[in-house]
Length: 304
Image 1 (cartoon, rainbow, N blue to C red):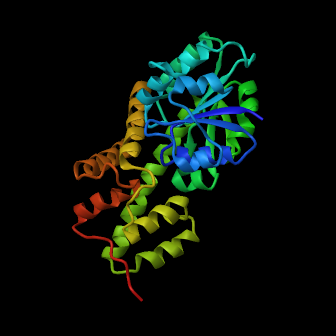
Image 2: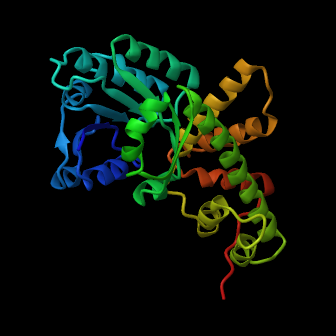
Image 3: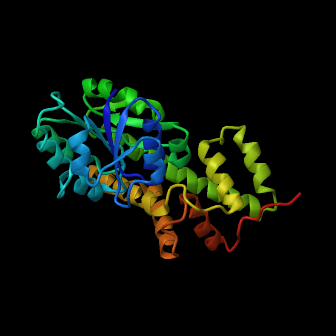
């Protein structure tokens, strides 16, 4: 049984922490808005700061919105590092920080180096699967870490995900997540275009979606986001502002590598348009609303 710290209890983090609490592990919790009562009710131990979490745990997980948030929680005042440095030696072995946020691969490598310099270990383990995957412990988890560290943390990650893959060394998990976000964002936009076309052409979008699910066009995006588009259910989910943050990372990383990602850039601009129309907090499937404005047509749900 391990002492696990979990920092960041948002749409994704809260159910992830819940799965850990239902295991045999002791879980120390922190989030800026205060630890939810229902997590405390099932055994979660609330901590006032990331430092306090780090002082109690031998494995510390972060699930935060963006690169600056991870940096602040790690290295800021009352951050994780200050807790690791204050350790009296009660844990003996090196402890490990596992960042499950989606952040810059370059920053990830810098953060890992700093954690290594004070005698502890680091893994990047971003996730895919959205709020539904988090709730069902069915996330795909992409891990960048030394092989020995991966073996150490794998059983804990498996409590939150159905597919846990060791991609490579530090930063490789974030690189894999970038690839994931390219595919996901372009597929969401493609599903929006297809359903918009179907509706404008006079066919039933829901029946077309059902038919396509059985063919080569079938995907999790068509299943989940296609339904959201048809039903006009745009509460998150995964917020557009976070999708846009991820695409910022994608395009910045591509620029650093000297490659062009033209279709990703187009989708990035459509999400910019969503934000300009007040949609930062909408679900990322709401990209379809910008396509609808361009077409001057809204997807119409057929009635029997």
